[in-house]
Image (cartoon, rainbow, N blue to C red):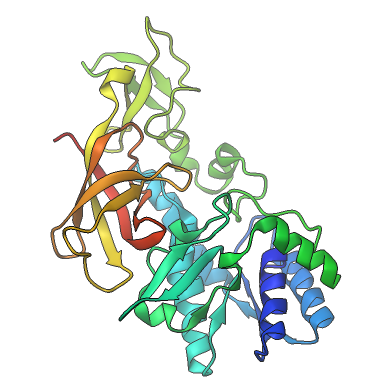
Length: 342
């Protein structure tokens, strides 16, 4: 339980459905100290609902698994998504394993749905498209889905808040957390300066011909497709084309140089446990808020896949997740290694 309205309503819905429920809050590493405010809010909800509450200390595990991986990815010229790492290793790794050990199931407030297909469990997007979180859950497989409950998948956010108010839940008006949870103010530059100053090492901004156009303030401050904040002037708008970590160089170019029709992805997993049939229509998202684009999957084994798009995409960023769908059904996904020109 995160201390927010979604997990609070999740607990309430489970009680209404007749489940025996207890709340669990994981303490993660955050700037400025621990999750006392989160734990206090979750405890207040549990007391209101009359259920037990437990706090699990994962501060150091989170710091090593998520925060250190986050900064290491930026140092390597990648644009990571820490929520993906947290879900895979902690929420649906350590916490789910703990639930299984106790003979329990794990319920969360994610906006996604679990359905039973003809032979396999299927993961689908939530019905509230503005809140759908299935993109962050692509790594879930049959073992995890069989031990999970996602009560909010069929709800709209506005109805969840209304239900919390009707029940008098103490977090009904609590604001949602935004962006990266462990960065207190959302200011990446300040966070890097205080916790990973090596990421703010200046270097050259090069054009495609190798000419130096200016100096960047640290590769971690940029991502593929970015136009604003480059601090250089040219005869036409310039965009970030790639981050060259080996040279600590930022390579920029015109809009015409953006866009690739394919990418290579690592750590590929499939919800069903195996690649989908070759004739299954697929769409892919290369960022959480990106629009799905029709694609073709070429599984190359060893958890590597090539994904080809029906049209060039301008912002394929190494380190981000690529997630494949068939309509609302999540097929699987992986971590973008690189964009491909052919």
